Length: 220
Ligand code: ADP
Ligand code: AMP
Image 1 (tube, rainbow, N blue to C red):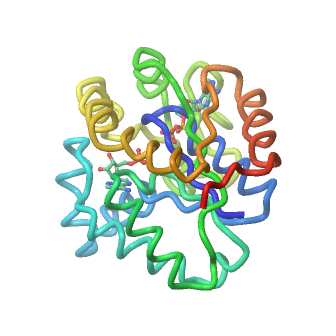
Image 2: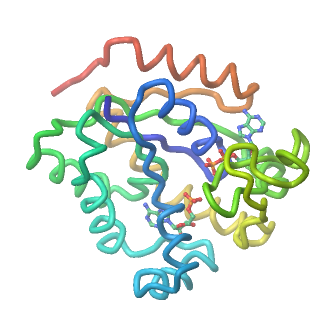
């Protein structure tokens, strides 16, 4: 199963992506996590990406496309994958199409759009804390793991530097202008499924699984 998760920052892509990965037995590939890890290790990729992450802007397409191409070539992607946060521009979507066309993977099975209004996004992201090691998201309103440590790996929970209101607003603007248009690309292919993301986590997950199990209305 090859899935794409699209939605504004804070819609729940990471939360749902982890659950879907567990249920479907395929890896979740989150370009944001990969880029933040590169920033932490101060690798050349991290140094070039950091200014974009700090401003809430998109890292240039060619950088992210190369990163995803390398990641998809790894053996754990043979049975499928869940892309979280990629593609984020129409150019990236086209690059992904040609990347998959030239491999044994075949095309994408479904593009799942998580829809959430801006004010809920700001509320969710202002309260988000993430595991500094495995990146699992938590929220101040629903509990910060095991006394501020990740329940999965025990590492410290931290606030992402781009989860401050000013940067959240910038990221929302980037989403509206650069990312939302790519949903049309998948709608035209008959692969787009839209799910309202403001319900409880279990409900959103159930809705996503329902859409994944339904046959896609592929147009080509
Ligand atoms: P994204 O990966 O799309 O940026 P996350 O999965 O990190 O979003 O979720 C953003 C924040 O909202 C996190 O703090 C997460 O715990 C919380 N969250 C995720 N899904 C829900 C939900 N259905 N209801 C309430 N809070 C949620
Ligand atoms: P995320 O963790 O998905 O919220 O992404 C955090 C940041 O990483 C974004 O604000 C961008 O700066 C960068 N980023 C993640 N994925 C992409 C992508 N597909 N294209 C460009 N930039 C990205």
